[in-house]
Length: 257
Length: 257
DNA sequence: CGTATCATTGACGTCGGTCAATTCGTGTGG
DNA sequence: CCACACGAATTGACCGACGTCAATGATACG
Image (cartoon, rainbow over all chains, first blue to last red; front, top):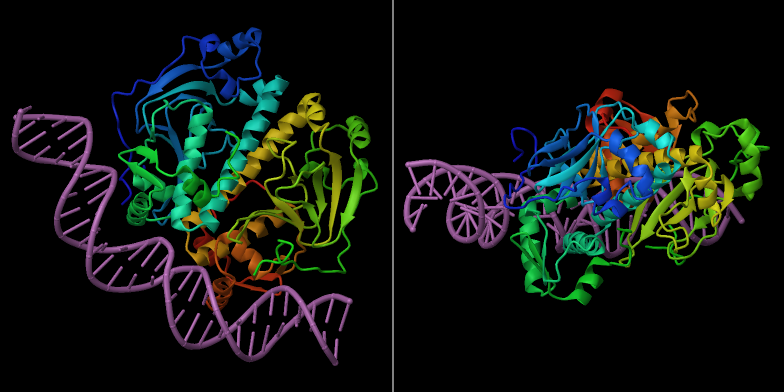
């Protein structure tokens, strides 16, 4: 049942305070972002170029499908989900964005957006103005190379998801998605060393990402739990049998980050 | 039934002579390729850099999943299909590449390939050596920007396919795929003005791209024909009812090229 | 003209969807 | 602190879209 405003049902968790850096020098995740190639001396350029850092509450939209957008975003903290809504009312999630993702960049920067980006948690973003962005990239070769690489990585992620949705049964699909998120969190060292991994998704999100119904996701998660593979409950994932999970999800092909 | 060599069943059409240009100056589709930003004066650089132009017969592989690859390819003429094979034996096609596509570029250029690229028709490609490529891009900002844009466009295509496979029923999926290929052909002016559009795909290819079985693709194509929407037979597509097709396939969201 | 691939058809089975009722969990307000 | 509300998760009954298997026809290429 789609919400009246067309959004995805989201968790409006409070109590999570996203971290916003004092300045680009202090940006803790700069190596993950598009700013990675910039030397400290070049940061001033970007600092004057960018609009500023902002904290947004869970449920807010960075941009909406079909509407123009005047900004670009560096995701600094929190989770963002990117999806499209079809006329049938179905939602297709195309990306779960973690810190470091560059959001809002589409081939035609002046066209209306093709997707909606919605905050899954409270979020911190670094905001760029959209129109002068091509100029910034054109005059800064390092940024262009970095952008090419980021886009290529996102492409691999998307093709990976396509393969998952198009060619695997429901249990493997779910296992693959959750395991992939795990790996991405690990690579960023965003997970504490505990056995429980916090993943702020509802079963509806999983369903919308994988082309399944929420009911069947529930049933399949139960089955995975009873089989002793993994346990996802209350936005907490516990891996019960790593080998079994790797086998089921066919994890040889994980995206780069 | 997967072939013994792991490939997709392909059409080995003869009688189609791919066009290979006399040199970069004469390259008829340069505006579509990664070379687009290069001025005539810069072409010499690339000419000395590249390995050469090659013609390959239908069925040959540009590179194979899991194996290293020493080249990168500009597709000049013909169709190439990019896919992954899962342990289950299922194939997932992630891209139908048309002339202009830059093939073989993955985030880690020295790692084994994640996908297989196989020629659907006889093909002409312009070959680059793989190892020095980052250097070429780093020293040529125009190329970096172009590469970023190409990757971004491919990303939109992949997300589009993901949405198609994850959120649409079989008839709309097939309609969307075929209509999308039509549009891409049109944009390149690769189609003669006839009513029949040549699309060198098997029903098996359609099935492997869309996560359907070949049998159901056959049944659904028949149904689309009887409903007077489109007629795809013997690798020839005829659109019977354009409005109905646009409605069914929800063609508001076509990728840029 | 023979053989392999591709396409079609029918019978049958199942994975996963839909609907609806109930329960659970969490945040809110009296 | 409890009651309430609302979304999230679960469960069961039922059903339909799509897959599998197998046999037959149509095409194309050597």
